[in-house]
Length: 67
Picture 1 (cartoon, rainbow, N blue to C red):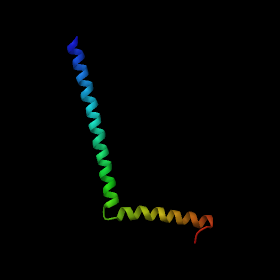
Picture 2: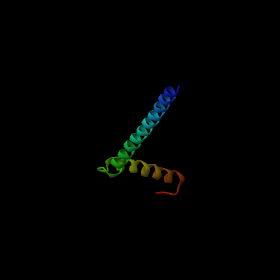
Picture 3: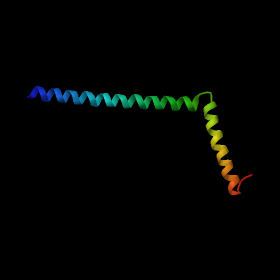
Picture 4: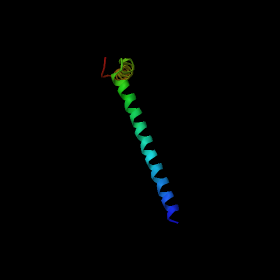
């Protein structure tokens, strides 16, 4: 009886640790991508900033407060 309980406890703890490791790896991947985007050559960063800038300009023009 105790061996079955010990087996189930060990199995649960190993699965829980595996889940934590998986989340840590996903988090590390997301952080690496964010660092690459913000500190890379800037082409993707500039493209994203350009899209937001163009959108803001269009909103200003359509509302009559811009150019």
